Length: 251
Image (cartoon, rainbow, N blue to C red; front, side):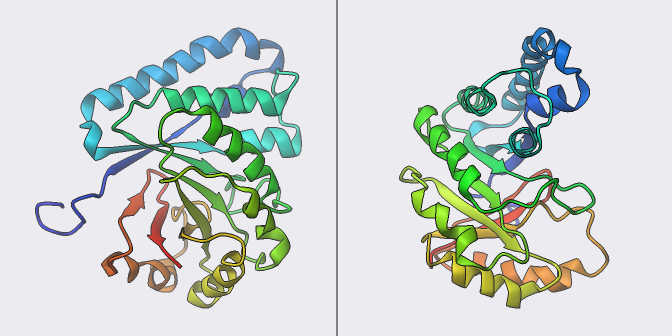
């Protein structure tokens, strides 16, 4: 595709991976989690090593999909660690270090997408910021981006206000998942207008992937995104295994 000029020369192949906690919490009884976790994490990291061995590092991007972690914090999904937030942050930092320099790294901070619904609607972006800031401080390699959800009905100041406290490092991009099928370009612009009061220099994308969508979704959602890669300030598109598409745009 690069040779044909269909995608930009800087575009990378993005592989989106669930975290070990996604399996540990959902499939392993809490009483057995501590015993199972080391082998489970080792298996995940072995698969990551296989990916790293098969794709040139300067062509690769790895995204950790962080959803169950918010389920643990917001809905008391079972996790054996007493200090759940600290335990989650520690594990996410460890996963960041598993991605070597030269490979781009991102975190998709998610509230789930079961039947196109969150397991809980986020009250605001506060908890996302509480997870992201320690990641920025703890992962001593570049975090190239984070992606976070914006529910369709949240175009209010209260939702975006905590983003003023986001301590992202220089070079880290923030993608807001504010593109929705139901209200297309009009709704996207409305949510962007509010977001821009609290964060600058961000990209946009769908809230939690574009898979499992009904017939005709491209016709409604794609106009929100497709024109931007042709603009000089839009550096690249990110297409993940869960079919997120985010395009960076300076506002």
